[in-house]
Image (tube, rainbow, N blue to C red; front, side, top):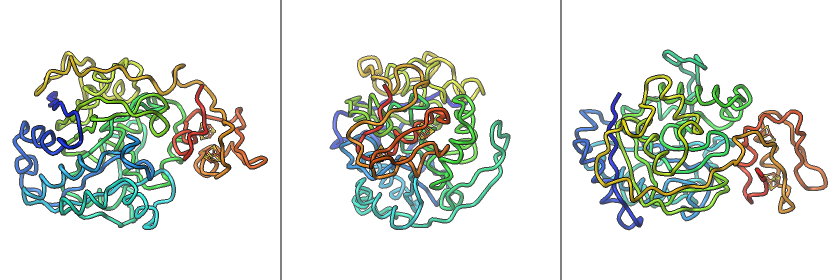
Length: 349
Ligand code: SF4
Ligand code: SF4
C-alpha cells in the first residue's frame, strides 16, 4: 500500500500545468513513473458532454498538463472515456468537443481515441464480480492514469480517482451493473473490483473546482483549489474525502478500499506531501441528505427527452404527457436518472 499523496494548491486553471508538474515531480517525474513503459492511457472523467466550467468533468487544462508531461518523457499518450449511454464514435466526438478534450489533445500532442471496441476480462481476486467488459484501449495501454474530478455523488457519496475508472466499462454496461448491484456496499465492492482490474499506474485529482450538492452532474461548482496525486487511487480518494469534509463512513468506495486493506481508514495515516491540506479543507454539501434512501422525483422542468428512461436499469420510468414518471416500487435508488438528466429535472429531496 502506498500511502503518499501530494497536495498542490492551485487557485486557477491557468496554473494547472505547474501544479501537475509539482505532483509528478514528487514521485520522481513522468519518466520515473513510466519506468520504461510506452503506451499511456489518460482516463479523464467525461461523464457527459458538458462545458468544463460546469465542474462535472475533468478540466482540459489538467488533462493537457498530464498528457504533455508524459509525452515529454517519451510516451505515446491516448485519451478516452465512455459515458453511461451508447458508446459510439459520434458520442465520443460530441463528448470530446464539448468537454474541451479536442483542445487538450491539440495542445499536448495526445491522441483522442475513437476505438469503441471492448473485451471481457477476468477480475483477479474479484469479490463481487469475476468478469468485466473494459474498453480495448484501456486493456492495450502499458500505463493507465486516472485523471478524476472531485465531486459529490448521489449513490456513492463521492467520486474521485477510483470511481472514475467505472468509465472504463463501455456505455450501457454501466447501467447493467447498476441493475445487478443495487445495494450500495455491493456496488462499491464492484467498483473496487473494476479498479483492481484496470490497475492504474498513477492517479491525479482535479479539485481546482469541484462539484458539491447534487453531484455527479447536477450540483454546483465549488472552489477547492487543489490538484492532488499519488500512485494509489485509493490514497488520493481518502485525501479527497478529507479535503471535501465528507465523513469517511459515508463514502462507500473509500470504506470498501479500507476494508480490503488497500488504503488506510483514516487521513491521519496518509503521508501528506506538498502543501498543507488544513487551510484548503472546504466542506462540500452532500449529494443526498438522507444517505441514499430517497426515491427520486421529477420536476416541472422535465423536457421529456427520455434520457433517464433509456438509462434506468430497472425500466421503472416512462413518459406520460411528455414528462417522465417513476414507478417507485421498482426503483433501486441507483440515481442513474439523476446523473444523466441534461436539465437537472430529477430531484433527490
Ligand atoms: S428511477 Fe432512477 S433511481 Fe430509480 S432505478 Fe430508475 S434510474 Fe435508478
Ligand atoms: S432526462 Fe430529465 S428532462 Fe429528460 S425525460 Fe428524464 S427527467 Fe425529463
